[in-house]
Length: 250
Ligand SMILES: [Zn+2]
Ligand SMILES: [Zn+2]
Image (cartoon, rainbow, N blue to C red; front, top):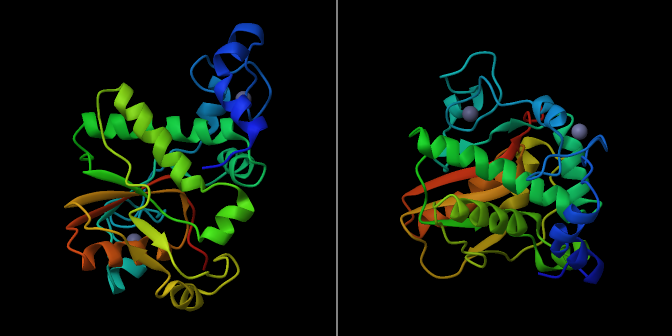
């Protein structure tokens, strides 16, 4: 995974920075928290997921029901764990991570997701999978972007979970994207589904239970296609863990 020397320094020198410069919040530049590059005010401003579809976490007016799309056809993944709604100010964090290549924004998202997972596991709402599987990018897109945000997120989530005595390995190359797809935004729901057909392949045999990792889930089609490949190979349970759930485009 290549971040470039500057980003490597930025990522590895956290302890030095903390000692010499008080960290600034990634979102508002006020003093951040010691363990997270976001201030307590901005963390409170993140919109926690409330009522949503039990299966795909699509935001709904009422909880404990299925969204219209899941009522018509259930997705192939079994559940979605998304602690936050994809809304301001979290959208800023995603942009900083994916498009401005700020590793600290990705690390903050990893910690936010891992903390939410740990709380859900402790309360029995979520069970730990046998491994974390990042949603892959096509190699050309990864070269262009310089990294795969899902793979970095999976590594960070695994690291934080391990620190909380919840060890889950990352199967970083289990899923591969073998066909280039058009960027999903701007495509209709039908086009999105067609766009992803045959886009992924699997290396090796998946374990019984996996959690797919991605930064944001929008239509759910990418996760569905990954779940299809995993289940065809014998995987029984596919959870999807994302930092944020966006409302599905109408
Ligand atoms: Zn802030
Ligand atoms: Zn649904």
